[in-house]
Every structure is written in C-alpha cells, then in structure tokens.
Image 1 (cartoon, rainbow, N blue to C red):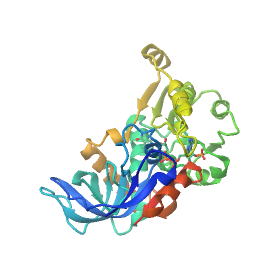
Image 2: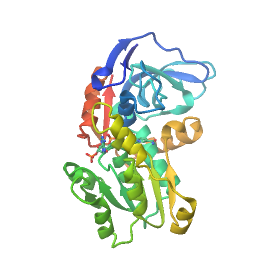
Image 3: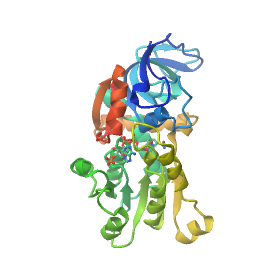
Image 4: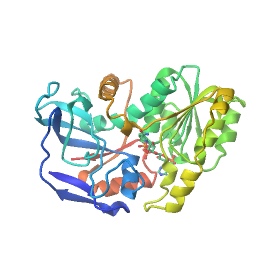
Length: 338
Ligand SMILES: NC(=O)c1ccc[n+]([C@@H]2O[C@H](COP(=O)([O-])OP(=O)(O)OC[C@H]3O[C@@H](n4cnc5c(N)ncnc54)[C@H](OP(=O)(O)O)[C@@H]3O)[C@@H](O)[C@H]2O)c1
C-alpha cells in the first residue's frame, strides 16, 4: 500500500510517499480502501514534533478516512466487505489502506460523497462535544468562536446556528464574508481589532456565555475573562504554538508559559466553568463516538449540516496540503484524495 510518512520532524517536505505491505485487520478490526482522508492541524503539529500524542517518525498520521471496507478481521459483526464507511483512525489515515476498529466506522449513504464524508469526523465531533456536551449551548447564549473560518470553526458555527445561539467569530478579515454566510453574526478581525474590547462592546459589557478557544497560551486567559456569569470556556487547541512551517522552541515555550492556572475559589466566585477537550484521548469511548458520528452523518445527509471543503489534494501532495493550512488560507476542511 501507499502511505505518506513523516520521515523526520520539519517543514512540509518531510512528508514522503512510501510503499509498504498492506496491513492485516486483527480481532474486531476492518481494513478500508481509502478514497479520502481528512487533514487536521494536529497533523501539522505532529510533523513539527510539537504533538506529544503522535508516535515518533517515521510515522503516518491521519485521524479520519472515508472509503470501502475491503477486509474484515475475526469477530467483526457490524461491517462487511464492500460497505462504504467513514471512520476515525488512530493515525495512519494518510494512506490508501488503513486498519481501524470496526466500532470507529459508520456507514455513509450514497448522497454523501467521499470527500464530504472525510470532512465530518474530527471537525464535527470536536465542535459537537464542545458545544452540545461540555458547554451545553442554549438558544439564548452568546458564543465566541475563535478560528471561525477553520474546519472546526465552521462546524461549530453550523452547530451553534442549529441551537439558535448568537455567534461572534474571530478570523482573518479575508474570511469574514464566508463565516457570515455560515451564520456568524459578528465577525472580528483579531489581527486588527482588540478582541476583548470588541466583544465587550458587542455584548454591552456583559461578556459571552461560551467561548471555544483553540489558540492557547495567553488567549485562554483573555477568553476566560470574557465569560459572563455562568459562562463556560472550552479549551481544545494550541494553534499559536506553530506560527510557521518550522518548529520554534521559543514560540512553543512562551505559548506554554502563558497558559493560565485556574483556581477553584476563583471559579466558584466567578460562577464560571472551564473544560479541556482532546478528541484523540476519547478513542476508547467508541460507542459514544460512533453514536455521535452516526447522528452527524444523518444531519449531513438531511442537509442540516454542510461540511465546507476548502481544497483537496492528491495523497502524494500531502506536503502542499500542509503548506496551504499553514498559510492560513483555508476556509473549511482540507482533504487528501486517493
Ligand atoms: N482538541 C481536539 O480534539 C481538537 C480537534 C480538532 C482540532 N483541534 C484544534 O483546533 C484548532 C483548529 O483546527 P482546524 O482543523 O479547524 O484547523 P484549520 O482548519 O487549519 O483552522 C484553523 C484556523 O485558525 C486560525 N489560526 C490561528 N492561529 C493559527 C496558526 N498559528 N496557524 C494556523 N492557523 C491559525 C486560522 O484562521 P485565521 O486566518 O482566521 O487566523 C486557521 O484558518 C487547531 O488548534 C487544532 O489543533 C483540536
């Protein structure tokens, strides 16, 4: 089979195509002939050596694929050879074949094509868990979504819209028309404007009920301070740790050093909540993940949710896909096609 391997940490050129033997599915596992594979910011961090969860190089990353089941291991009951599925993969997704537990794959209807399907799992599960499970977003809430033009940001905007919440989104100004079209009520260009002052102005000083923050470092403190009474902050990323195509230890250390420490008494007296979310550490919650994915696939099939695919690249051009993401040009999801 063909895989894209991170041969060492570094710039996008370290993503190299390699031929390796086909994987054999074990007990309870299926093998998928991959048609499309989602690219995530975590893959960029893994390439830079800034993602502790990823195995060391040489490694093939990739958290999600769509395609056809082409082999099943012993004990598999829910999928058969020939089924069209979308699946979570614990690494290995940048490949034309991948093995994953059957419980992490769900069927996709004919009405959803492979590329759209591959754009569902990570972005929409992250947004769904952040908004519906952790912060329990309500229609009367005001939610601040950072990185509203990215894959998770657009998924979160669509899910917040379904709940009827008021949405404030931050993004580069070139993305404002696009995020407004998705349902963002107030777009803030965080590069030009003082986000805190702007959110206070928009909310008449009250602050917001929910913040989704994947920026990290100092941003977590700013987001926390913007919470109205009973507000909830969901921290789920550290985008600011990787400003360029090469690793910067200085930036990594300053980002980590600027993380806030939350104190119980302060949380109590402020009537605020903080949550952390890392989908990659929920892999053992297979039933919950599969139930949520099944619901998301149904919502996409029904047109309630519409994944936005910014651009596709052939598998062998994974390096260009990373460059595109790191140039911050994508509005929505980047997908590799096989
Ligand atoms: N915890 C989890 O389970 C989980 C799951 C999925 C994603 N995440 C995290 O969520 C964040 C967004 O993921 P995504 O897949 O939606 O990414 P994405 O599609 O690449 O979007 C991220 C957006 O964030 C903005 N951004 C801010 N700082 C950036 C930086 N240093 N480098 C690149 N972009 C930056 C960019 O928009 P502007 O042009 O507007 O700045 C970019 O479009 C990442 O931090 C990712 O690691 C976490």
